Structures are given as structure tokens and as C-alpha cells.
Picture (cartoon, rainbow, N blue to C red):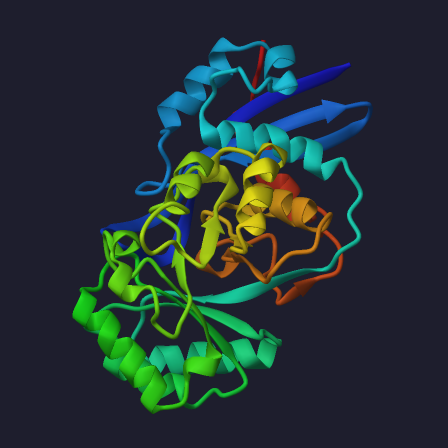
Length: 328
């Protein structure tokens, strides 16, 4: 006998988090709780503004409309929001054993050059090998000076579509002139329309698709463009699943494209779900170290997780305080 319940949550960030045209001061969503044969599992459905095609109202409607049995079966034909499908498949992922260690990059938000230096120093001290850094035309000149101070790190730059073509030319030139290209893993989403511009196909750094490939179908479409991405960033809660994404992921790999999984700024149940899933397969360093963004964080960030951490007593108290509703 299994029971499924859900509850809304709102979790404030320590400071507003900016990406592209969006700034979030908190994260909102729904936590799912599955009770099954004496075990309890938690997952998360939390659409991310600017990335997700669904909204909180869509998730609540689906949870209130469908029966527990229908939701847990999660048939591919069932029309449910992508973030909810991720949450449902997450419950299955957590019940399966995993043996692979999960590696993560550090996340450096859009900050000043001085703060960037401190953040990268802290990342090195914590044992990270990869750092994801938000970049923009007005911040790049100061940032590249700092990057030169950390030859031991691999950098993943994320422009969130904020650059112009000439800005990308400058970044490539600056990295080349400072012998930093070997430390650049990839650059995410430089500017809108870049995948249709063949003139950028030969630049000496890998370009990654994130916002422009929110779904498996869109990722497949980008393979046919004049300048297809070298790397695809997959946010499972945005793309709509975990196990149901496997066919698309394998198709991208057969096309010799790299795949990097990342969170969509989920709280602990969502990140723990991704840890459980990624521990079942080989993977590149992923984007899971976002707990430090929250005022309260019950799942400490780490460069490597050997096993999926359990739920602390403090997190249990938080989960117990939520206004739970049973699915019918």
C-alpha cells in the first residue's frame, strides 16, 4: 500500500540570484512525499521561471486532479507538467541502488571581481575542480583578470544570452591571449541565434545549449542547425523527467555531444533525487552545488558525493511543518 501527499514550500535565498532577465529572491514549489512499505521518499516539483514551460498552478492542478495510482504509474501518455514528471520519476530513482560517486562544479553567481576571487579561493579550498561562473559584457574584463590567478581550476562560463557577437569574439581573444583556453570547459548560451550562425562553428571553445534546449525535442532540433552546440545542459525538472530522458540523452551522445546534468535551483528533495539518479551511471561533473544560495540549507554542497546523504533531523522538522495534502 502506497500513499502520495504534496505540500507547497517557499524558501528564501541568502541574496537575490540573477540569471538572464530574471532575479529570484526565493524558490517556490511543491514537495512530494511517498510512503511505501514502511519507507518514506521525498521529491520536488518546482518550475523555474525563464526556463520551465510549466507553472506552479499547473503542478497543483495535476496533483489535485489525478489519483495517486495514476500519478505513480506516470504513463508517457499522461499529460502532466514537466516538473511533476521529474518529481514522480525521482521517487523511483531514490528507491534504486547507486554506486557511482557524483561530482559537482561549484557555482559562482553574478558578483564583483573581489567576490569572485574569494569564491574561487573557497572552491579550491573545498576541493572543487570545476567552477561555473556567470558572465556578462560589463563584468568580463574584471573577471578574466581573476581567472588567471587560478590555473588549477576548469571554468564553465554562463552568459545566459547576455552577449553580443562582438562580446564573444572578445572573450575568445582574451582567453587565447592569456593562455586560458585550456581551462575553459565550455561557454553556455552566448547570445540568441548563435546556433544558426555557421561563422561561429570553428571558434576554439565549446559552446553549450541550456535555455535554447529546454526539452528533448528542442535538443534534437539543434542537432540540425548550422552551428550545433557541442554540449547540452540538461535540467531534468525543466526537461520533464529522469529515466524518460534516457533515449534523448543516448541520441545526443551518439551524435558525439557532451551532456551535463544540472539542478534548476531545487531545494534538498530535488537535489537528493538528482544525486540518487546520477549515482547510477557515469557522468560529467554536474551542477548540484546550489545549497549555499539558500538561507537555510539542509544538504551541504560538496565537490564529490560518495553516497546520497540522508535526511537530517533539522530537515525532517522542516518537512513535518509543511501543510501536507493527500492525493486522492
